[in-house]
Amino acid sequence: MKNMQFITEVGQQVLAGQSITMEQAVVLSQIPDQDLPFLLAMADKIRQQFVGDEVDLCVIVNGRSGKCTEDCSFCAQSMHHKAQINVYPLMSEQDLVAAAKQAEGNGSNRFSIVTSGRGAEQDKDFGKILGALSRIQAETKLKVCASLGTLSAENAQALKAAGVSRYHHNVETSRSYYGEICTTHTYNDRARTIQAAHDAGLEVCSGGIIGMGESMQQRLEMAFELRELGVHSVPINILNPIKGTVMAEQPSLQPREILRVFALFRFIMPKMGIRTAGGREVNLRDLQSVGLMSGLSGMLIGGYLTTGGRDSAMDLQMIKDMGRVPLSAKER
Image (cartoon, rainbow, N blue to C red; front, side, top):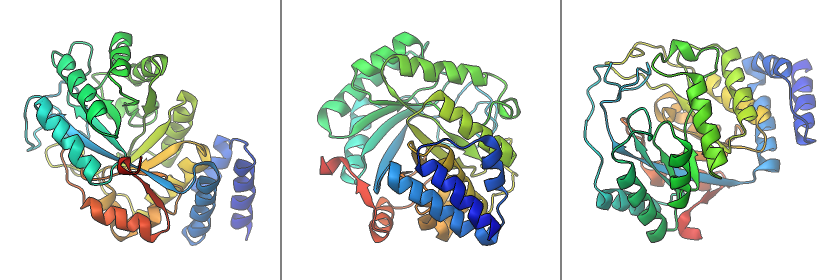
């Protein structure tokens, strides 16, 4: 009863428009599993009030794969690892536009071109990517996004001019844990790119990956840091260990722990879009629908960069079965 009372008090505080503290978030993170359903329900109540019932759907395309110079320990595309993936140069403009149109036909609201590599500043393909993004913006009803690594101010302004509405650049984990997953660039490098996107008038999509060996406290730190950065959308990936990477043997998180993180992020960031992304199928398994009852307001559908997802029609049906509204470009 004491735990339920605390969840209620903190939930009412958030519903009244007040931010929760780290101390309160830590206590919520320690609620025993038998009271977890109540925590999830309160998180979903917060989602209902501040975000509504629409589920924002996004599809990504791996526009250029592999040979990345960075050493992110989770990533199959790093040249420092030995993961067996398809490596290829930038897809043609026609193929990128075709992928976007397929995403629109499958019910997505957003579409993002993602490329491997450190960033756009010295990217010889940047002009070609701008051309593809401009065509997608002109030829579909999709909201157009991009994920091209680090950005200069000039890069960000060019993306805005091309019709990009939102830039994706994950912080990946908390500042305190960042050095454990990457040494070739810093947390501050990522924060600077987020600021460059903000300065250009772009919305920002930034989240991270849970299950990389970080503590629950560090997951909470990431959430508070994202709140401070003022991002618009927060994708929560769950590590799907890939053979050939440093994290190939990292143990999987339990579904209950993942659902707890979803709920905690909603308590901390009540008004932001929070979406489930890579790793949900293999880690949540039959509890994917419960994720949508834990405060989530969006999903990445149709597969990921180097791993597959499940059929988009299954996700659309799941959303509808729960009485939620899949936000689709086709409806606009």
